[in-house]
Length: 264
Image (cartoon, rainbow, N blue to C red; front, top):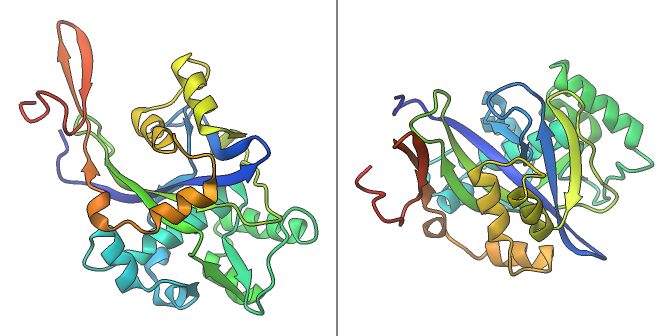
């Protein structure tokens, strides 16, 4: 078992308020491992560029010191916010940014084609996020992002991630669209309905996805959920390391706090 190598990663639940109540954007991964054909949230590993001072200088509302404190890290916390924003744009075309003059982006109509082109170039590594921000004189907005949970891949897996889950409130004039490569389907759905479909086997999900959706239960407003999450500290996001064991030919899973967790 690989107990040491953990890849830092960020995943984000993009939320919006609609006539049907709070909705979350879920996406279906392609057949490629490690999450083939599963419904998940946009996200991925932290890239080197996410930690650059250049891009940190374009983050509005939070410093690396503040972000690190929020996650219980000595430093480098802001990279998780940046990774959330970058992954959102790469995977579903949602950009948590505004123009330096204060204007909002309009990725649904007026600026749709321009940013679609930027996104395609970004996915081909022809341009990076910082270069887009400089070209368009943009500032990354972090006020609509908040930490949500902290999950560590079980030791039985070969590829292991130390993943910070966030929630993000969808900006106006943006809807999102899956990339058609890594992601083959996307769906705005009420978290409670998503859970119902998951338990019926209609949407294939892994434990962290289900548990994060369950954290949304009890809320009818995405803005209220974001407001409450922003009040929390790093002590409210303890690392969750699932443990799996085989007994009599069947696999069983345990979470911290479960009976017998410490004995496995």
